[in-house]
Length: 186
Image (cartoon, rainbow, N blue to C red; front, side, top):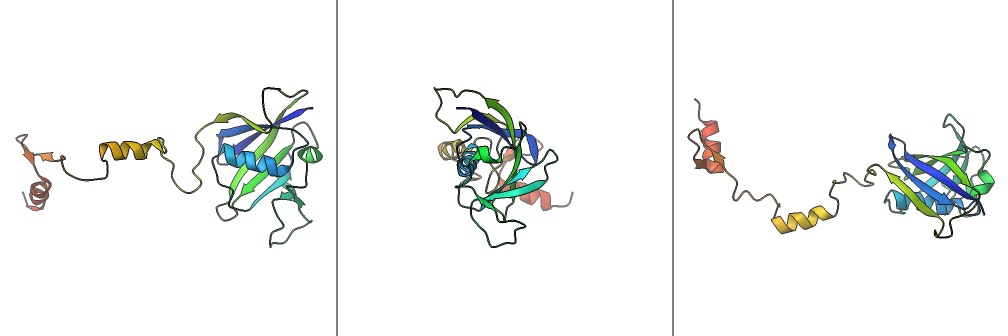
């Protein structure tokens, strides 16, 4: 069975992308789930795909559900629409929108069609990740979850104990003394 490989670019930065290999018989819902997994997003929000052309213009909508909004044509549903049915050319593109309030946009492009699947892989599968993914709900530290462990181990909670300033002669002065020195006119 052939395998389709899609590259999902984060719209604001094309150096950040994830590659997903998937069968043409899989449905758009599985592609939606793989993109969320690849970018470490939860699955709590609304989502939709749009078939697109070479200029990234939105076409037919393939939606997670029928939402309370106006449609030019009724949307196809992700769980009912096989990916292969919407491939119209070798460089097929889709726009994927997740969380309509935050409006996360991903540009999804078919980059490869393999004639045979790799028996060592279980499809769909994330095959490549490039760049630091955006944080879904705010800033993402470079250390991520590990920072909490470091903070706890070294007590980086912001206590001022042990930190001081030196005066002009190089002697340590406390924060109270430093603040008093700053307030006095010279």
